[in-house]
Every structure is written in C-alpha cells, then in structure tokens.
Length: 235
Image (cartoon, rainbow, N blue to C red):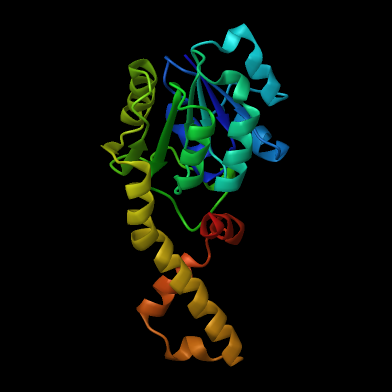
C-alpha cells in the first residue's frame, strides 16, 4: 500500500522511519522543505516524493493512505486543498493535537467517509526530520477521532497503521479530545511560555545559579517549536 506523508517533521519523519523496513508499504512524501526530502531519501526512510499535492489525483494513488503531519492551521489548509479526494478510496489522516477546527471542516464536507483524525501522544522538544526516530510511537498512546459516517475500511487502515507503529489506540470524540488535551498538554505549555517571559523580564543572568530541576523541566517545554505551539494556541 502507498503511504503519502505530507510534512516530514518530527512526527512525519518518525512515521517514515518506523515503516521504512516494512515490505507492505511504499512510503512517499511531500514537503516544502526540500532538505527534509533529501535527508529522508538519503536515509531511505522514503522511496520517493511528490512534486505537487495535485499528483494525488492520479489513479496510481487509489486506495492509498495520506497522512497530513503539519501544524493545525496548515493541516486545515491542506485538507481543503485535497477536496478532490473527499469520499474517494484514499484514506486521509492527520496527526495534530487539536481537532475542533478540523471537525468543523467535516461538517462543511458533509461528513465524508474517508477522513480519520489521529493524535499520537508522543513527541519531543526537538523538531524537524533530522530529529525523527523510528521508535517514537512504540508503546505510546494514539487517539483516534472520527464521525459515524467514516467507512470501516478507512478506520481499519488507520488503526492498522498505528498498530504497526506500536501505538496503544484509544477512540475519543473530537470535542472531548480537545477538552482533555487543553488541560493535560496545552495548558502546561502556556504556563511554561508565560514563566519564560516573566524570567526574561527580570533581566538577570544568574537565575540558573538558584534554580532546581523543576525550572529545568518548565524550560524544556518552551524549547519546543514556538511556531507550532503558537498555532496550537490559536486553534
């Protein structure tokens, strides 16, 4: 089966590396950062790349799995641009940690049968394809969210993928998903960024002399991609 990964960052790159040794998959990718594509081709985590997302209109991609692994607002834009795949044999999956805006889009598309939301609860404060690892999802949780209209073959395709990656799967309603992760993941990052801004305002260079492990844990959170987290907060 063909798997097309849109966005070769930490998550997309790790999916590619984890599946690269599997005989059952042909891994292709699309990314605006050509260096990420070159890296993935060099380490043989992908077998090829797409020149344009419009390439997916070709019959050769029938019954494939498209994974959109980009920040939330970019995922929204990409999903809209793939409207020609709605209710086709192609399964479309995301990996973002917010689902509300995507859920609204499902309504606009009249609840298509082939879109399955997913959120791997795995990651790192590091980002980019260069920091991707093959075992990122092994033993970690992945949340699936989908409407009743989703066809079983598309649900099964996504479920089988995360099983192959070693994830433990839970199914949650999209709104409940967002409420849970707003408190368990997003709020701690808000607090960490607020703390960093407060410390910067003190204009002291010796704070590290008086800090313990707790402050280090907070500051580890804010070393995550600020662009990605600003996007998550805005969603």
